[in-house]
Length: 493
Ligand SMILES: [Zn+2]
Image (cartoon, rainbow, N blue to C red; front, side):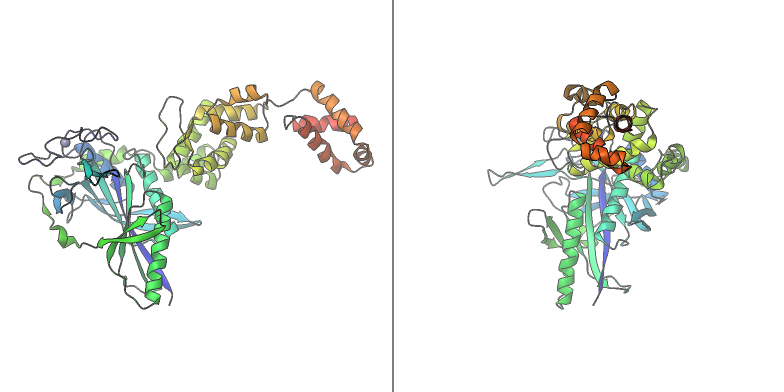
């Protein structure tokens, strides 16, 4: 029997507010353990939560950007469970009446557009973090993260393949970055994803039994975990066995999912409205103001790139699908307005993107600003600013170095973090464009290759490529190819 996979994703995104969702504690990552806590986020008896307006504003922006319907009134609920990282014994979340519902997002997979439904977006608080000691049989808990605002974005079970799931996650993360409400860092856990996966006979309407996957902290792991789980379920079904509804963890070291616990049902959490918090009513004027002030989103930016920079749709799509790339592109052109936008686009989509995919390169916009955080696999990273890209491409357009040598310079920029002009000077890579230097070298080549010279004079103009190639070799790629052509023509003519 043929089966199709049905995938739904639950994304948790930490909101970039200065303080926590129900108290004034700082949300900065990496502080000494338990230094960013107070009676409210530690769940001390008698303390009372107060909702952070900025967290609601961030959540509403995401709701608007994904065409959700914002509820006039939503309710905070207590989700009760026991775990050592949860000091109150319950998490404040939203259940029956979430902040927003019925949105959607359009993704592109292999050129085809797919509309993915968003069931709901709700606000909740994050839990603390357990640190398990490797040296001793003890565990520690850090409550700094307790009460950091999160939005949970739940998709409809509209995704069919691991590739679609990854595209959806990338698109979602990109919108969060465009809105500047989340830093999208998968490794630090500010953008996390759980996946629900089930299989059903192709064409069937009813859903099969699902498993929930956790612990996937990179796009690569999401894809691998989904692929593994689909294969595992297919093998069980083919053998006539049942799928057990459960939560499974992705084990990156073993490349497999392993059973973690039986799946809880909603009733296990004994949700009820939090009596300490009033219902959230969204004033229409506030929502309108937020809508008016939404920043430019990926689709609008793509259209503007096509219009203002005369870029092909493909280029505009690639550049704007990652805010860091789009920002780098625009900042480069701002710093060097004489550059051809298509030249800059080709460069970023080729060389820069290739290095970024290795995970060792972070790009920024200005020399002074902090580069946007991206998923980094390797500890050693190099930052390339837009001013470095601008000066490198200016060297090419001015003819100081050839396009081919620019790649060599870029390799060294990535390896050493040095400035392109300094590299060209240090290594003497500047293109040789004066005839006086090249002429004697060209003559030498002709003298050493009488047969080819004869061929050329007999009308076989194709050997010109051979002569230019020889001169390139002699000058380590630094001869100006156009000038080389002219010189050989003159000497052989
Ligand atoms: Zn606090």
